[in-house]
Image (cartoon, rainbow, N blue to C red; front, side):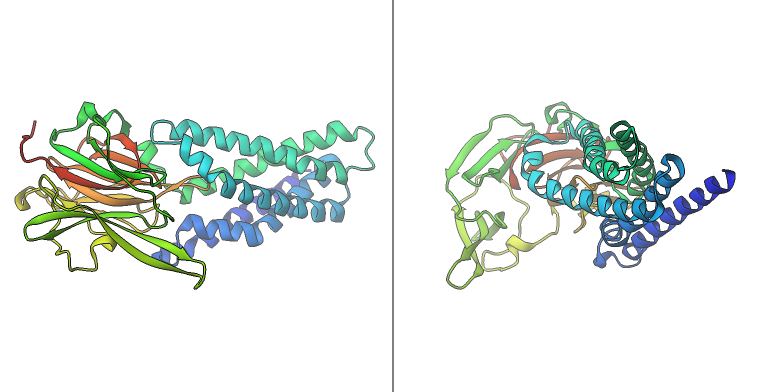
Length: 379
C-alpha cells in the first residue's frame, strides 16, 4: 500500500510540474498571453487527460474498479465537464457583470468556486456510476467516488491557478465609498451608460448623476469617449464601430457630443488628430513637479493598474485575472493628489488612491472622461 501511495504522489507532482510548464511561456513573452491563459490552454488540451488517468487510478486503488475502464471513462468525464464549464462561463458572463463589482467580488468568487466544485461533482457522478456498473452499492459508492475525486482535483488545481492568477485588487486594496476619500471636489466624470443609451455625468464622489445627452448606438462595440482641442475649446466626442451586413465588415464612426466643454481638461490633442480615441496613455491633471507616481495600465488584465514612485522606488499593481473573472484596466485619468479614475472591466468606473490603496466604485458605465470645474477648488 505504501508503494501505491508513493506512486500516486509522484503522479500528482508530475501533474503540478506540467501545469507550471504550460504557464511558463507567458513569462518569457508577455505578448504571447498570460500565465493563466497558457495554463488554461494546457489544462484543456492535455491536462484533462492527466487528471483522468490519476482519477482513474484512484478509483482502481480505493474503489476496486477496472483499470482501463476507469481511466478512459474519467478522461472522458474531465473533458465533458471542462466543456460544460467553458460554455457556462461564456453564457453567464453578462449575468455576472451585472451582479459583481469591487464591492462584492471576493464573496462572489468564493461562491462561484464552491458552485463550480459542487456542479462538477454532479456532472462527473454519472461517469463514476458508469464505471461501477458491477458494484452492488453502486449509487452510494459512485457519488462518494465523485466527491473524493473532485476534492483531490480541486485541492491540486486551486493552488496552481492561484499561483498564476492576479488577485491584488482583492488582497491589497481597501474598498470604501469614493466620497470618504476623494480629495478633489471639482471633478466630473462623463461616461457612456452600460447599455449605450446616452452620455451621462456624475461627480467623482458618486453623487449628482445626470443624463447629459441621449443617443442609442446601433452597435456598442468599441464605444469610446475622448476629448480634443479646437481653438482652445474642448470637444467631447464618441467613437464606435458598426457592423455592415452587406460588406460583412465593421466600420469606424465618430460623433461630437459636446461642442464646448465647460471646465478644464488634460487633453492636448488637436481635433484633427486620429489618435484621440485609441490612445492608451493616462490623462494626467497633476502639475509636472507633483508627478511622484508614474501611472500606466497594461494590455492584459493581469497587468492591471500600475504605478512606480520615481522618488522612493516603490511600485504597486492592482489587478484581477482569474479563471472566472478578468477585469482589465482602461481609460486612466490621474487627478491631483495622486488619485486615479479609470474603467475596471467592462462597466465599472472606479476611484483609487495611490498612497492609501483605498478603492471605490463611482458608478457603472463605460469610457470615463474627467472634467475639472474651474469654479471649484481643491479640498
